[in-house]
Image 1 (cartoon, rainbow, N blue to C red):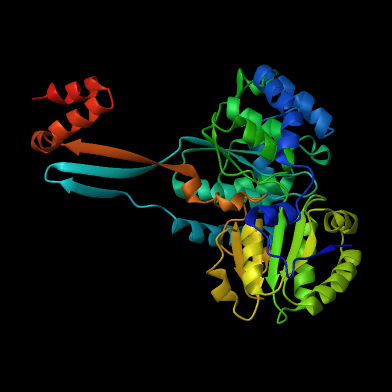
Image 2 (cartoon, rainbow, N blue to C red; image 1 turned 180 degrees about the vertical axis):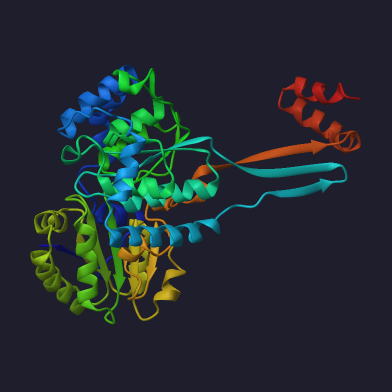
Length: 440
């Protein structure tokens, strides 16, 4: 069901290692060509395109693209008590974890009368995406909204796919999560078309839409499939994005102290997201590799989404990678740059400090990825496809920008005036120096 890759005795360069490690065959580059016409259509036709695309991809034509407030209230009122309690606990923990992320303003006295300040300013408006295709993710609503709220963003809009079973509205639990968080601007729009709507805005096409259905945003965040990731790539620069969070990934770095049942359960738990989900075990124990192979087959056969899981585990993006030792293992997981990295070894905390590339690191046997998906207090919107090499998971920092404020008095400028003129003239930009000389 899951392939094995033996790297023992092989000294690979970083480039060779990246090439040999398992990855999904359908990349963002391939999906971008398919998504580009969708983005262009939404930009051109607005709400009319959104309804046509919903009918095509979601098999329902929504009457309301913007969810009426009464539907949010109704969804919360009918939410089962146990689910509400779980969402409320998640909100409390995620809010606590994100409140500590707020960056601090600072002031530096460069010299007498010379001051540089830095202010952190939230963006004005954000578009937050919550998937709703193969599974429904009220947890993603929480991760997106809480991070933006803690950053102080004044304008929040959420989009999630329309559901044929819910009259063309997003899933009721998605709506209830929005209501719990006080979000009033919610759209029944999914996939690449939601990204396009947020990036370019959308004019209304039906009387219920008004003249303008949705105003454009400054930043778009949220997980999604490879087509959502491709749409984000296409609109980057028009808006900011968190990262290209495509199909989910889990990598487990384990030695012979790991419990094969735990590892197998964790691999399957992420494989149930999507047929393109990646599940990778990196171990220096052949015995553990064999035990996990056997347990994965058993767990996968018994799980609810067994067909989806089997596709993910059997795909080229999933494998058990056998290495010589944990030194080589660390090199492998750093080259892979997993969205979620579990470390199940004797010295898990020590090894975790050495990892450079991972969206989030889960240390020890009692910190499974499922904890981070819901209740850890961290954020589960994380970079995939190796983007953890240069990108961070979603957080308060995703919604704020640094603004520098420079304030010099006359004497402070006079101290450096001649040097500014000299450098400006050397760069053949004499007017820069003249702008300083004009003040004296």
